[in-house]
Length: 227
Image (cartoon, rainbow, N blue to C red; front, side, top):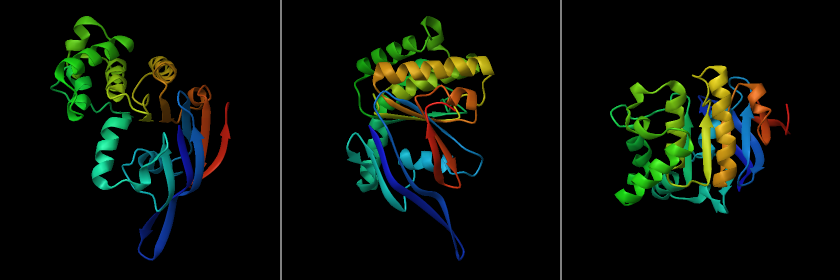
């Protein structure tokens, strides 16, 4: 489970202090799929960076399965991110000279998983997201946008993370493909018993997630099941 308590991130600009995230508290259970919505500048990206341990809060705590990540050292955070948190980006961020299979294997290589296990896990994950046979051997340039995002999802799942964070994962996709990807993420949350949090501007899709958090001026404005 993800538990966030009184999370604050303040940026300094000269003599001014700007609270990008201001006292946010929220929780998302294992197997739940939650969305974060809000206007540009509302703090969505900053919050996602904090949850992913890519940035450190000014105050507050972030617990992932009872581990307070704000208390980990920089060295420990690198290992924690590798093994416990998966990331999905709008631009896919796949390595262009690697095949789909090799892209999914890569996080497991960093985690020192034996090669045979890396390959078996990657094949299984790509099968689960609907990429079979020869497509697993294609490089990203020979895959459609929707297929590349499926590879990115499989890669995010590689090390069996407790938390997956997705930043506008359907932003580069057409509406129909975007709906397919969101449905896939929802299914993965349940099957893998993984907490998934997605930042999205698409209110029609956000309304279909288990929880929706709305941010305004760095504060949690509302939490609803449906928008």
